[in-house]
Length: 87
Image (tube, rainbow, N blue to C red; front, top):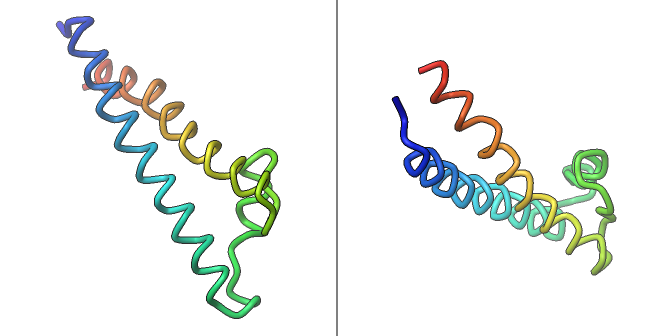
């Protein structure tokens, strides 16, 4: 049987891991979009996934960064307990 503390520490570890992974991935895609020709841009893929995201605006960039980071926590809060339950 899992302890409440163990579950909480797993969620925290996975929350930070996934959030930083998604944030770094987002930043890499933005950098790629600035360097690559327009036909290779990924910003059209981010727009439906990140509310408030808009290409090449400061508010849009910040909304995308915050959204990416929060998605990591959302995944951790949902997936870790489910994984532990089924494991």
